[in-house]
Image (cartoon, rainbow, N blue to C red):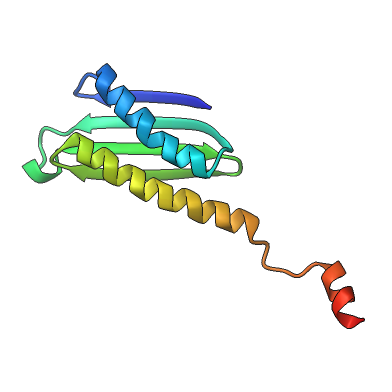
Length: 113
C-alpha cells in the first residue's frame, strides 16, 4: 500500500502523520485490497472559522477510486469524521464486490432435484 500524506498551508507534523496512520488502520482492517492512499490536509484561510480545517482522502482499490472530504474547525475532528465516512464507503464497496446478485447454475440444478 502506497501512502502519501501532504498538507497545504500547514506542515504535516509527526503527530498528525501518526494520527492519520492509526485512523487508516481501521479502514485497512475491513478491506485489505487497498492499492494507494492519498491524504491531503488543508487550512483554508478565506473560509469561515467553523470550516477552515479540511481533510481529504483518495483511496484507490482494485477497480475503483473512493474519495472523501470533511471540514471542521479542528483538524483532528475533521480527520475523525473523514475516516468514519471513508470506513462506511469502504464497507459498502466491499459488500458490493462480494454480493453478486445472482444464483449460480449449480444451485438452480440442486433446487430442481
